[in-house]
Image (cartoon, rainbow, N blue to C red; front, side, top):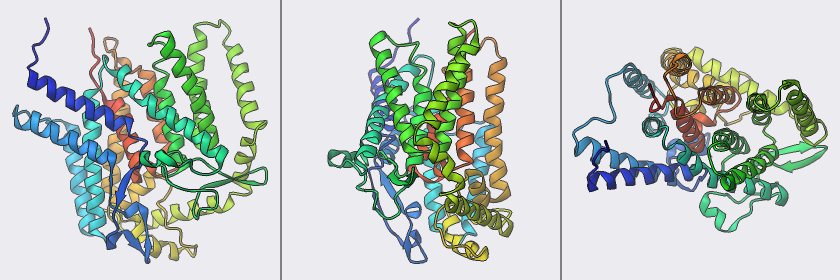
Length: 447
């Protein structure tokens, strides 16, 4: 029996769906307006990470929030935001701990700004987890496709041109840069300095994470769409793989190979009786891709040319641990890592690198202390337990295959050990919110 929906409900649902899909579609864009209050300066230097910024995606998520607030909470009297369950209580406890840390921090305004952003992404992730279901997962995945294709082709164009493409792409968030731009991400390949493509992201590593996670999600479409769309998806994944390689992001490239070893093995098991055929084929492809291309020098340079980068990360790790030891209960305060970094970097006699520590776990530990870190680990552990329980439920059909959900979980956790963008940058935080929502989505149970 079909449920009767009023015109007002239909319009509300359509508006919510439109805003949600637009937020996903424009996830790669960093189009926004930066502001530079006094707390965004450290040692007289403007720090992008501390700059309050109004992004296009902020506007879309804000409109979605007020739509939900008015139509669900005000009109219907139902509470969409706070439901009585252990997760809600833990989130409230986490926010309370963050507020205490901000109160005792060196820059409370920087902390309050980050807290507002955190609440924004918590709402978006919570909404996405409730919005995704078995019926619309293919549509949501298709919404990723246009942005993914644009970023893939743009990364190739930037690599070939060795600069930004420019023009109308500025409105999508591409910034003007070349290999000579101060602070730009270059890599040494066979003795030559090469510009790593950015797409419309603030760093090649964030672009690589977006391409990697998007391609994993798009593998869902291959068996579920018709021939023409299937060919488009496969073509897009081939182009995306080239774009991913050109970012020269070591961790993301290795993860893509590892994921394909898992996904390809399952795919070939259905068609090839002897799985060793696939494994031999996979080893050949990996060997050619790494050992017989400039990628090989990129990986070996980690122990020769990139020693300074390695030392920089080590010193940032040491500074994060020192911050935790100095403020073990509530940390140095949310968004205060860079504010306090000069004091702690000088204590280890290293040069001043005003960057977040390239490890989200150390960053959370340093900024929120043992209480905040414990709650963050609890959140990750709860997601893991949830995925494990679903695996045991024979009558549960998740919106995404359980194996895919676990793969997302492992990839996100692994990337978090080597970079900070899931906690510090707009697109990285959105990626974290969306893909963790895909782990928490529940609408797929069946008897």
